[in-house]
Image (tube, rainbow, N blue to C red; front, side, top):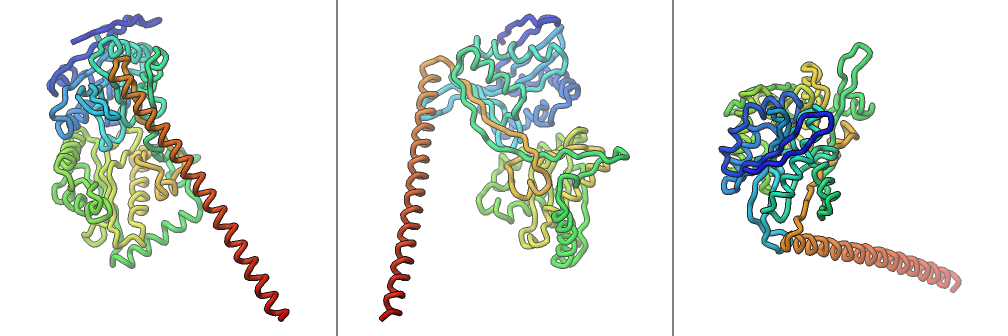
Length: 412
């Protein structure tokens, strides 16, 4: 265990420490960590049970590195990471990675909203910097404006080489309130889309042979979960092997998240039911502030009835009843999401490279590869432009010759 202290202005001393070991290190501060999550109103993805589930499913062989910050013996920040050997740009390196992947939705540091909480980031960064034993720090799926972004900025200010790779702009719907203070979920949509929603409802009823109705399960009923997994696998995700039940580790993760979230009252599985058959479904987690659909699926044979849109319409109406003012669509800026909202949250992967030989070599090889790809892309685009211009000129010349030939023939 290592520790580092920072003197906070107008606040007691902030200290940071790191504990390395197996998953058991999480248990050393689980209760305080949960209280910190409740106080900071952070997303579920930062909670200790979420991180423990991720480690069990995807990082069984990795060393856990739990960074924490305290002020006056109170926990004010937690940054869960793993340390492992990996290859980066052809270089064998030791990486400190955020305990998250694409199934985690988002990664970040949970920290107190108090004045001392602002000092937690520099304290943890100084501990990472002085601790060594790493070549690259990788912070995946970080939301713009979060504490991990501040960590990357501090590293850059200290002369460390850093990179930020955009991952996706994730649509988010912020509901507004009407004159009576009631949430409204369709304010950001246009008149045509609202008309289409009504038409989709009638069309789906006609195609499926019954009136669709929304069901919500706050506990993971095994038969319903199985039906949802099968629905997702029956579509394009199953064909490309990215459906939940295509990988045992992935399904184990979602099964465990459903159990843990249900135990703590933040799990929801919404389904759009038509005569006992699932037309669409959404595996989600919630807070008082936001609804997070992690996985969605729909019956692709009924796509003309837009069961996905009808499902989201029902979910949003449910959010209004539960007074949840925001829905985070997640993922990329897909067309069906932007029909509901134009607002997005940018996510990126942040990288910090140590001044070690391997760290610097990895940085240079990665940036050189990016530079070469950039040159190839520019050359390819220039070639396409020249080709298009050449084809246009040939077409124009052919038309001119044809016109001249027709004129000469008519004169003869």
